[in-house]
Amino acid sequence: MKVILKESVSGLGKTGDVIDVADGYARNYLVPKNIAVVATKGTLKEWDLRRATLVKKEAKDRTEAEAIAAGLNNKEVKVEAKAGEEGKLYGSVTSKEIAAAIEKQLKTEVDKKKIELAQPIKEVGDHPVTVKLFPGVDTTVIVKVVGSKEE
Image (cartoon, rainbow, N blue to C red):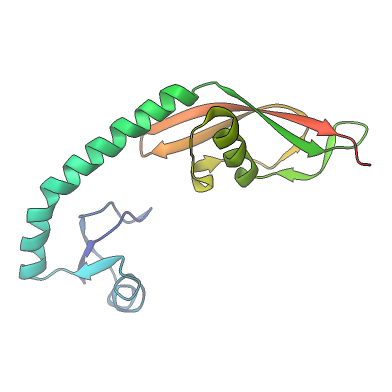
């Protein structure tokens, strides 16, 4: 079944793409969740008209993401966590904590879903973290984990 994506889906395509998917996947998941619409002559014509607007919006979003990336590139963010004697953390530092630290210290709002942790941060020290702001626009933030003693 041919469908038009209303939003980007990793592994399928980006907003406005016409893709061919299994009938059940389209009927039971994509269409009910309002992620895609069935591609008919009418919807194809409508999306051709919307495509120019989408291209402008995507260019604007990319420009904003590049500006944010330039402001965040190799900046240092301090995160405090409870740690033991040898610098091992009780638990780990999450992307939510990193996003909150970036917002508080660098005055830049970043969605926690855009922060990629290769592995959980479980030690005190400096850790480079990738922030994927937009497809093709990535930056690195240095997360400085400082241990605090448990009282």
